[in-house]
Length: 86
Image (tube, rainbow, N blue to C red):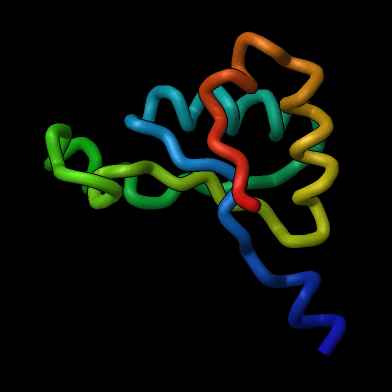
């Protein structure tokens, strides 16, 4: 069961476009937190998509979530764009 938690990907943040998500991804990866971007293609194809359909999600491993939040909290210009998950 513990192995499942280690390998589980969770949403770190949601962004209006892939450029914003890529900036945050770069900051996190520079600080040792691996992450992936999902829905990037969808947001490019449907830039004016209603509601959450076109959002780009940045995913991190569950065990890296707290570290990622701390990193982004120390980068105020970028952290303003992040939508934290509750």
